[in-house]
Length: 190
Image (cartoon, rainbow, N blue to C red; front, side):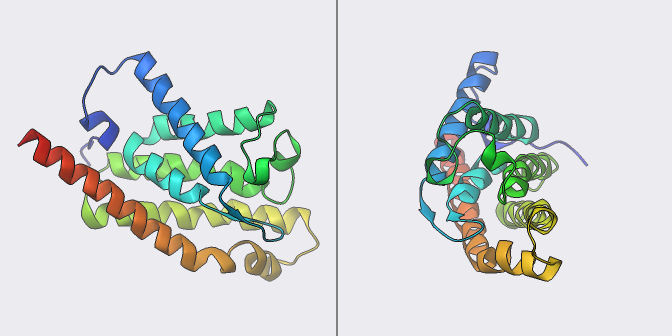
């Protein structure tokens, strides 16, 4: 399958290391800010992080999106209050939400990879976001199952079921935003 350009590349500009670093830092700040919009639930809070990650994955491409989420995790591990509720340090990276936190890297990378393989317009964007978001639940639920007394069904009911409808809405919103950005780029170029 032929390579397709992600939106961040299609926007043009110099493809310098400085531009890439700026995009990674902007993306990690966006994810950190979206983590603070949170509905406390136990053991996994509901946040806007996945919407921010979808926007990054759908626009940055695989490597840049993955690097952005690795940077986000590193910022939290180094003590920056970037996780949900202002949490930081190693505890969130080993606690009940760790599977989701590490799954964010894979989610962003897979979404960018799918975009680079042609799912970068219309329904393709929706499919890329939906597939990668569905995959996020695998490490999240399995980690909950591994470190809590919950059985697999209980881990699914605590870590996935309450979020499914919200994630579908976020997939639709991210698709509309990125589709609108592509349309604006197309009209700007004439």
